[in-house]
Image 1 (cartoon, rainbow, N blue to C red):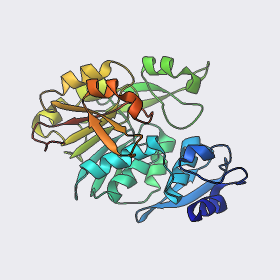
Image 2: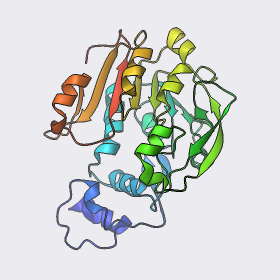
Image 3: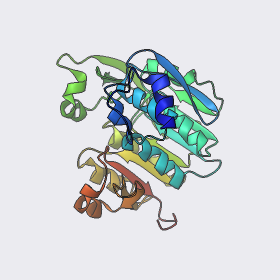
Image 4: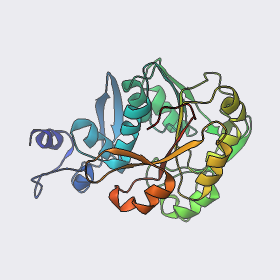
Length: 291
């Protein structure tokens, strides 16, 4: 397979025992786990650190038609909801990959809010004037400080939420390391308003939405993408119900590998039909066209 040979030449140590590939996770044991690789997202370049498992998988996906549901859900949501010229809020922007994907999908501007300085710096190095970087943690008030627990196993999942630290204790270790970072609210961001909010804030979603009261009232985004691992999704839905009464659980179907949007109850009853990914939700304004 041509794409497999291309992948081997760039990232792999050996192809022994691999004759057919469908998902990049099939290659975890043979993907190179050190060094960097530079790849393109649209017209932009991004440097990926192969020491991190998810960045190795991103590299595989960007180089081949391999599937990775945890990665593909973002691109599928963008294909469905991003419109030409959209302004995007990327909360918890990590290394800036989703920002580049938003631009490639037609967005004209992305405000990346990222609390960890080493990740913010990686976004700045992308060198695109359409990307702005705010080095802070989205929260319910600006000008305060929070202690963020740092993931030890990879550069995702860092959080100031104690419930998240407890649930994913394996990525923080017994001796949890923290970094103190400033906070900022959505309402205080000078680059708004935005057409889409992507909130990947690891347990801080309720705080973040409490810091967005004025924005939700005056200029609500067309859509909000976020993840929830617990029942706080119901509290979030209640808080945004006036501006975003339409709520969907998003998934990728196993039969046709397509994006599906179902109400939460319907998704729960048919969850076996979808690939396992972080529980992803879409909140829409009442004036959004019917899915």
